Image 1 (cartoon, rainbow, N blue to C red):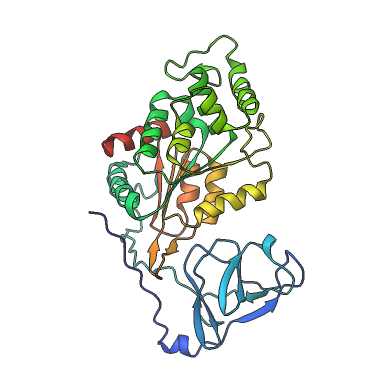
Image 2: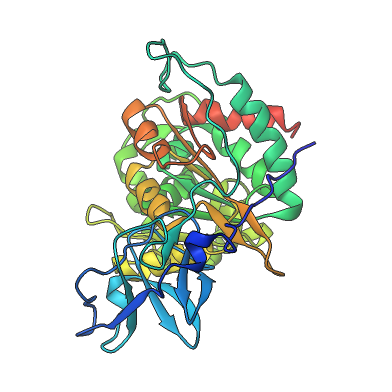
Length: 361
């Protein structure tokens, strides 16, 4: 049975915390500009001493700043700063300037390693059997107690079995939000509409005559009907990832790219509007699974702290998976300073089909 690790807050009765000064705040000199020596946030829990009390930044995000407002700490992107906001400054992290970064609150212990040892990184040669077993247990737990956000590239839409597997995960409550780009939705809807993805049959992988028109025809038809929901209804679409999201009320955020065709009507053309929408879904996330989309994965990783404060005040761990056939993509995101971040080097179509089988769907 899966169990969350207990969170251990710092012991602020210790002399070093009692003797620490209050953290310094300085006003933002202009909109979107932090004062010099601003403190940049990490993925870990962070505390700031104010009026003799250590305040917890309950909602965090990497590469943002901490703002004191009405006796609480709020974490904001630089673009959200307004002139006069009181921003915490100081670049030490051990409490000596009233700022404390707490990296081991879940008491994760790294295995002792010899100075020289083989196979310490995660690569295509790594056996991921244990990772799958742990992921099955985690997803069963999160279905009832958490929020699982999937960050997805278009690779799923090119394979019939992968589309069916993802649809089953959505249908059975293992998906609480989807973050993706125009391509995932376009090719998934093309697959449902014309049985192809970029003109190739989603089962045989054979190219169809004039198949290079298919994704454009799909976008055009969605625009004709006024949106995805209307397209699904009017064209009697009955399968796929986006169809399942619509059917089961799973929100999806489609962030645009400069290379997009169309794009589909729901796609955010403004990158900061897309970022805001993504963060709104990530704010409550307790597990993220990022698959075959390096830029969306990096964006999501930067928005996701290693912890989440639950209603009632309990602090729990956030689990982060990066799945990609590229070792570079996996290791870039897995190197987040927390053992809860896992990388799995594999074809994502195989990954999601294995998840479906392992969960008995």
